[in-house]
Length: 468
Image (cartoon, rainbow, N blue to C red; front, side, top):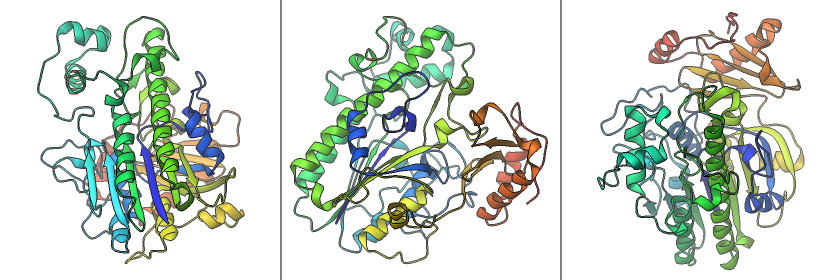
């Protein structure tokens, strides 16, 4: 059986019609929604660690990355994106390597440039890998330089600072000669993926991983997609400030959301192109299609623009997972079983009938989800830097790994994230914190402990310090 894994970066779960809508308006995603109707839809899917590279390390190996042991990377040619922001350890097998060694032809089509920077090795195990260059600040081009007029068009003057100016300069320089929709990144990723499928029809069985950096910021999208959601002619806004949005002009926040959701709709359209190619090639009847993302993105939610591990919120941490089985098993079914990216890796191996050479942390979940069987987990722990988030069916705990700065959310309340109930439920805080420490192996690396000590407590947190 063939397996296709599709990963979109920063795709908010609630921006898909089958999960949404987001707080501001409905997003048009007809192809994502059509896939959901033919598939098992997981409603309680979470990352194992964040952001970009730690997530993919967990997804590609089925092994925990949290609490980022030996993850204090300072590699030439890269920035320190977060603890764990580095290559896949040499002593861990990737699922691509395991599948290739068991007769699968493997392919990777991606424009996630972090995976291909110096010292990175996320293409391990792929018979063919293709890196589509030019996303974000990938040094794809060195000219022509932007004029001040162009900078002012893409970056409002009140948001300009040296870092943001340099960022937008490289982004626009990389894409200055796009003249048609097919030149944009998500379209190119899907077109090249379709071409790979056409060229590899002779494979007995294959595993194709498709990585689209869109709809990650900067939200550069053809104007007709943006106008679906904002038809005004006002100033542009395509970046994420990673800052408070209370002082952002309402028209700029609306434009930001329009560019993001327009890019989601464009991703949906080109996913539809990929899906039609799979169908045309006659592969729907012998291919499992798995659809997910790494994380979402706050766009004015809780007055914040960006993504962060502390305080953690669902628009970033809740992620989609949709699995289409060629025999129609699970079509139209939804499951609230708690699963993580490491479990997706384990499930891919089970679908392929391949045993890992060494035990992995992920657990297959398909049979239990389809049959409403026993859950594979009673909680999930997500690590991001010096913070942990521990979630079960009733509660959401977020704090620094030293137990400081506690937030506890009651998931059974009408608006869980409007109030912190840690002081009312110290027993729950202690219980979940203990689970998070256990998932870290009972201790944390010294550098993570120092990060936690140096990180300020977030406003609104409890002074309660849980005991493991």
